Image 1 (cartoon, rainbow, N blue to C red):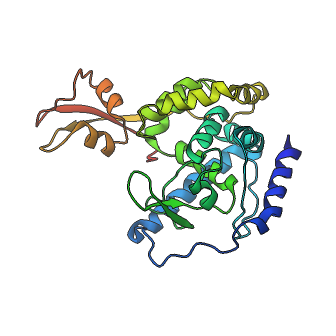
Image 2: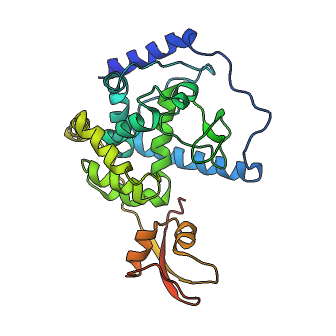
Image 3: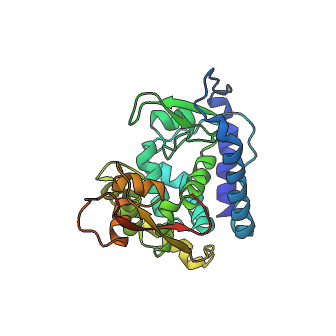
Length: 288
């Protein structure tokens, strides 16, 4: 297995000639410079903590040569062949089911054949967000000309996807699911706001079952090498509803989902009253 992934990496870099050797250069970067240093420190801290915990489980990414590697894929089956082992390594290191990672990659990138994936090696539609100082490109999504992260190799996209999900509090509940619960993960991603498409869970589940992606989860589980995550601890606080508040705005403030906020407060509808007291929670680790 290790030999195969090394072969894929070497193959990818040998194909540099097929891709552009220019890095995207823009005169205007949509980055909030005021918070750049803080965001970079947060990213370095969380990545460092992850690397320390993962040890030998974390596979080394290829050294970034600074050159964009074109990765042509002709079919879904070929996409799975190329990236299944990478998804399994990510599962060992971060606990995200390989089937979910592959299904998201297939859906978000058009199995590596979509325009955004071909131009940026971004297989998960991750946008720039505050603090991103790497390469980027623009693509029409929810709005016209949105900023998306660009990677020199698809592997960096897979790693960024793992870090993205594992360091944001709104996805924390997913990591309490069983490692083979791809249905729970698919529905949970929609619940946490990863995608606006109401059929997003069904699409992921369809890919997983059509291409038998669940077998990659089971193979990893059999090895017993998935990193054990410490149980998350929370602080429960009281929030007093202010004028103009909505469940959505409060949920975003505390990095919760609206359904989770409603469950915490045993609410049957979304009606709020000024002065109403709500129970909210935040991770003690402070990861947001």
